[in-house]
Image: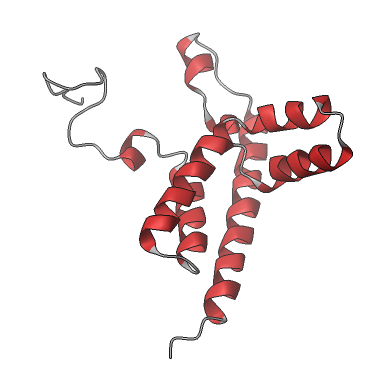
Length: 137
């Protein structure tokens, strides 16, 4: 049981709990993305870029809808590529169905888990590649 601070700005958010404790389903993605960005940029920039990936990852379905609705071929390709490159974090939000008493199907959970493993593996391989090419002299 978590205790909510009586003067909390956001009711329901327990005092003293980190983001990863409140949303553990996003921690592996964001850790991989943060490692990738930190392999080639400053700590502040990598934190900002990771935050942007988190926000855009929740709206990735809108990127696909935008790519379909645009008339320009180049814009369609750009937004379509962003849809497939950025993580689809909306797949990991089971809060609304759980609030209505529905649980996800086992096949869906297995597919989402496989997507996570593949995506995180590719991100960490990219971070390893970038980091191995850095010159520390």
